[in-house]
Length: 261
Length: 237
Ligand SMILES: Nc1ncnc2c1ncn2[C@@H]1O[C@H](COP(=O)(O)OP(=O)(O)OP(=O)(O)O)[C@@H](O)[C@H]1O
Ligand SMILES: [Mg+2]
Image 1 (cartoon, chains in turn brown, red):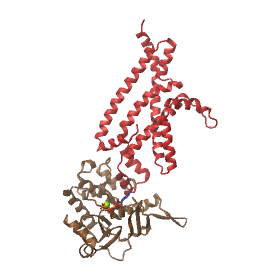
Image 2 (spheres, rainbow over the protein chains, first blue to last red):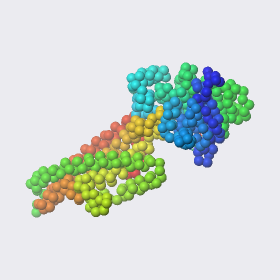
Image 3 (spheres, chains in turn blue, yellow):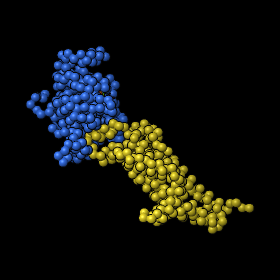
Image 4 (tube, protein in one colour):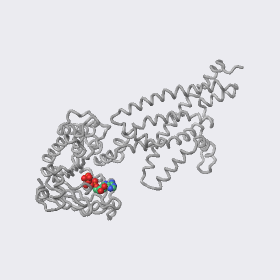
């Protein structure tokens, strides 16, 4: 989908992250090109969530740089010196990034439609009628056109997750992050959510980073797969490179364990 | 000897009722003050600075552990005598300040528990959708944090209503004060004080029922049960 000429939209440069004394990420270097679909796989606790949370500005790196369209996310210059980013700086860049969470995090006090409309209207100050139309279209796209006035508590997990995706999409981000968005769902609801992601991946031109345990799905939609292990990117390449042809011992073990489940 | 006289009763009634406006007015004023100032405590305590947090926490603790009557006396009698910052306040204003401040510390605690009961994911979603700090509070956090606290805030309204007669000690002419005045003048305390008791019962009881109803309503609103439980657990009564 993407070719090599484009400048990366996201760059991680030697990013480290510790929680207290625990070193979780030990030097992440990563390029994501505009429109590129990246799947992140790896054992539990390897830091997959932490990577995308740092990009979403929910977690601050301990050291290293994260660039979004060439702008340093967590640092800004002040009087010629590089200092820690303030909320204003973060807000400027964050607007290009959207995220779908494992536990949906819908706003329980708002209808489905309002969940989708609130950020474009209040944050981006867009025209309310235009946003309403767009939100309805988006909710129809994820198959929830008949639930506009329902509240989140009245939906199934799969439906909630589809609303969460519509809510993120209505903001028209350039980068969408998905953190194991199917792992809190009953098995029979996983399919409907994956279908929506597949649809987005095939038809929308935003970059996507998916943390997932759905190996076959990742193989199918990703331009690039990262295998994260012990705080570093142990393997990366096209899906078939990484999943089928890698000789990385730990990756093979990881995949075997996964496929036998 | 005649203990009870309906004549005295009907004579005292209009006089006691004259104080009703003041009692009710003072209750609402104190309550409004406490509701507003409760926010001040809550947000001061959220400032990420250890020293400020410590000062605010201990100030609240201090205000809460001193009797409201002492605070009233202090504001009304002692404060005017402090050189430089001393100000003489009317009894009514002193009462709003004294009782309002006292109860604001409890109410701030209720707000805090309400805010803490909002799921961490809601803060993160607000962030991911790039809400400003102000809009995050206004649109996402407070609309979820406050409704479950309404029954408890209502309870404090009643508790406060019952504390308002303290203000008669600094001369606020509420129903208790009027009853006392009548009693002193006519050497008849039984009837006027009984009237005061009846008025409090007549006003508190329906309020308590109303609050129970509100509580049931809040319980069934969206899926607030869990939030309400958290609020109950978290609030220091
Ligand atoms: N806020 C935090 N405080 C302390 N430790 C944390 C925090 N967040 C994550 N960690 C630790 O960092 C490590 C990596 O966590 P992370 O959630 O990124 O892993 P993951 O690869 O997403 O795992 P999983 O597949 O289980 O979701 C874990 O050991 C976790 O316990
Ligand atoms: Mg994770």
